[in-house]
Image (cartoon, rainbow, N blue to C red; front, side):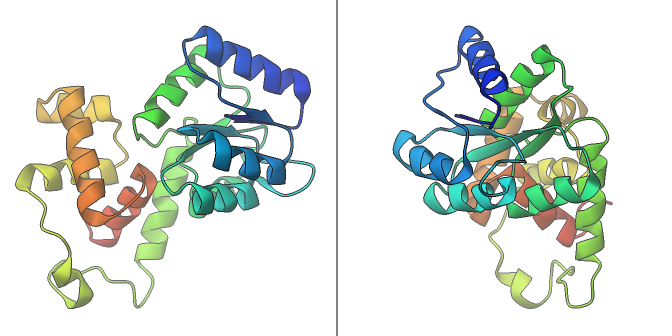
Length: 217
């Protein structure tokens, strides 16, 4: 599903996706309408602009996640401002691209988002990881894997834990596969299994979980 208030841009993105083999189930130019339509159309991925005429992209993300907890939201925005990125990710966006991204990179990002990866315009991934590290370092944040409420955390296999470490370091599935000598599919399966065990929805939430437990060292 494509959500953008500029008709030519919205139609162009939808056309590019269709030509690349994606099924575009809906488009919308307004935030509230997008949430209503998505609840009926049930897209796997929503490509969403940050600035909409009625409500903000952040409010749309919250509405989408409430209606469709498993939906993956890829922001496609003219703004690369730090606060805009962090607000979107904290609301539940899976990834964030600026509109100057090349078409081939955008289509690859949609594929990766659909596969559960967190995709960011170069430079923004480090910003998000840095913010999560800052939040994890706050007093009262649980960081000891053996203590308190964390002791009841689901048990991960040794390989799942190692993959989780690489996720926390901001590596892509391809990079993790190369580093650990695994196939891309195997890495993806480990991540999906870990998400299920931890009852998390996407790789962004998984990254924060790993950093809070000090697995990014």
